Length: 278
Image 1 (cartoon, one colour):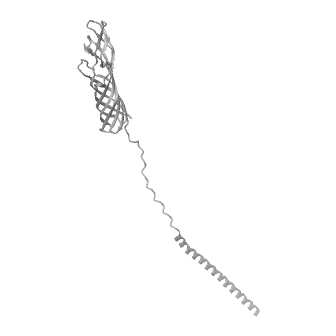
Image 2 (spheres, helix red, strand yellow):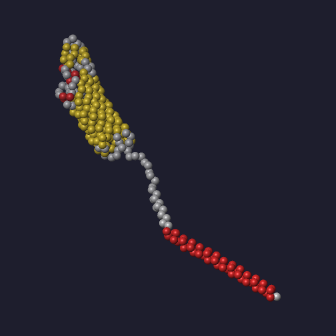
Image 3 (cartoon, one colour):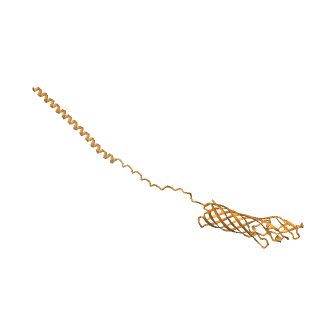
C-alpha cells in the first residue's frame, strides 16, 4: 500500500516539473519574440530618419499655344514691265525741220536697292514717217517723206514714296545713250526731175528727269504705271552724219550739198504700261 502511494507521489512530482519546464519555455519564447518585435519597431524609425528625403518631381511645364505657321512677309524686289510710249524730241535752232511726236514702246526692269530707293534700266523705241518742208536741208525742191527712227536706253535712280501698300510714287534721274536714224528720201526738183538723198544716222546722250506712279491692280503680281520724263541732250554728246553736211547728185547730174538735220534741244517721253511684280 505504501509502495503504491509512493509511486503516485513520484508521478505527481514529475508532472509538476514537466509543467514548470513547459511554462518556463513558453515564457522565454514569448520574451524573445517581444524583444525582437520591439527592436524592429525601434529600428524602423531610425532607418527612416537616416534616409534622405525623396526629391520632389519637377513642375509640369505650361502648355504653349500651338505654333501658327503662315506665309513669310511679302518683300518686293523686282519689277519687269512695258507699255506704250509717246516720244517727242524738240530740235534746236531754226532750221525749219520739226521732229514729229511719235508713238513707240517702252521697256523697263527695276530693282529695289532699299525700301525707298530703286534702280531702273529702261529702253524706249519710236518710229514715224514725216514730211520735210520745201527747201529744207538747203535743197531746192520738195523733199517728200522721211523715215524717222529713234531708240535710247539707260539707267535711272528712283527715290520712291510708299503712298499705300499698293500705291507708289517716285522721282527719277539718270543718264542714257540713244540712236537717231533718218531714212532715204526723194527730192522732186522744180523742173520735174527726182533725185535721192541717202539715209543718215547719229548718236546722242540724254539726261532724263521724271515723275511716276504705280498701283497694284493685282496685289503682289501686277501693277499699272504712268511716268513722264523730260530729257536734256548735251550738244557736245550728239555726233554723227545726220548732224553734218552731206552730198547728193541731183537730176541734172550735179553734186549738191545736203544740210545737217537739227540736233536735239530737249524731249519728253510719257509711258503707260504694266509691270510684273516679283
